[in-house]
Length: 167
Image 1 (tube, rainbow, N blue to C red):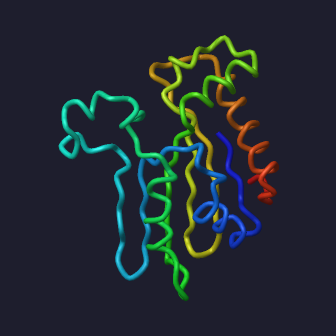
Image 2 (cartoon, rainbow, N blue to C red):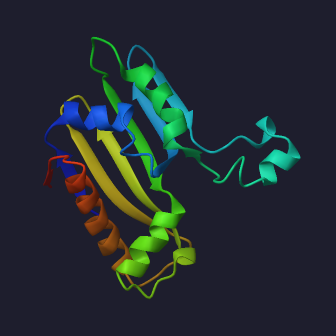
């Protein structure tokens, strides 16, 4: 797990909310505090789908919503002349990228053992912090996936020209 402070918040927010840079993530949850606090549960709602749609991976490939589908909603909640009081987004890397990070890093841990590589984005009015984390399906003494995810996240941010400082 690592914590990073974003040094150019305006640029980061533009990439997060109006660009496709973060479309490799799924949304677990979002909280945006403006004149109200808006909460979004990123877990897909089974009651919305027919039984066939629920099982069809072309209709619903993940249990969580893709960031690209909820990004415009989050943008609408944040845009305006006033800065939000706070917000928090909990994102999961799309599973196929998890497998790629583990394989390229030479990890003995399989993608099936990793529930998610998580990125939490927190803004509290004073600054914007990114926190990486790894959710495992069971306890693993090998922390290699954590290190690989931290490295991959920093590489991702650097490739997107997002400036940050380690905390």
